[in-house]
Amino acid sequence: MVFHLMIVGLCLVSMATNIYCGRRDAKKPPPTAMEIGTLLYNIIDSNKDGMIGKLEWAAFLDAADTDHNDEVTASEYVRYFMKASSVLKITWIHALFQLGDFSNDGVLTMADIDQIVSLDIDGDGFVSDEECIEACAMILKKYDPELE
Ligand SMILES: [Ca+2]
Ligand SMILES: [Ca+2]
Ligand SMILES: [Ca+2]
Image (cartoon, rainbow, N blue to C red):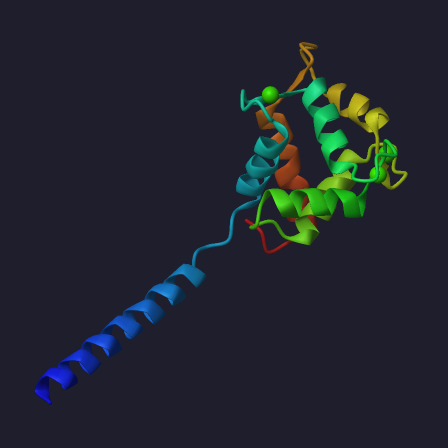
């Protein structure tokens, strides 16, 4: 009898611990705008060298363009990033879509990529990660004022 009570007691303790740990996980602070920008940057920087070259932009467009019409719509874009990372919110991905759509026609194409590449100040064919992530963070905060 005493033994049984001990088992029940142990079970209760372990359940309580599980619940407590679960709650603690849920309280994990949300990512900051800079962290989200970095995350998005790293997804496109496929060879992880801290720079996004034109070929990487092209590869990204190709991967996101599920119906292969050479245009990436907002929903193709959202689907691609939601698959790539589970912490991203649709609002953030939409904000970044606006940032990349330089021609403002609602789709991302190589013409937009040419514009992004033209942000490359020193002309080495790469847009620096700092500039890119800062631009991402700025627009994220504009669309989601709760972000830090
Ligand atoms: Ca790269
Ligand atoms: Ca498409
Ligand atoms: Ca466009």
